[in-house]
Length: 52
Image (tube, rainbow, N blue to C red; front, side, top):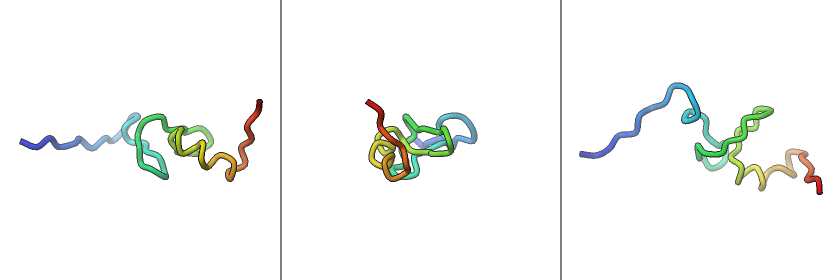
């Protein structure tokens, strides 16, 4: 029998990255909705600066 993924209605499993659609490590602050890996690629174009 095939396993069927359960649709999530609330919680961490509902939020996914805008770019790669992963559900782990998503940055929700300021409404970004990027996983941490994609955020590193996009951060400079969004206006974030790296300190130190």
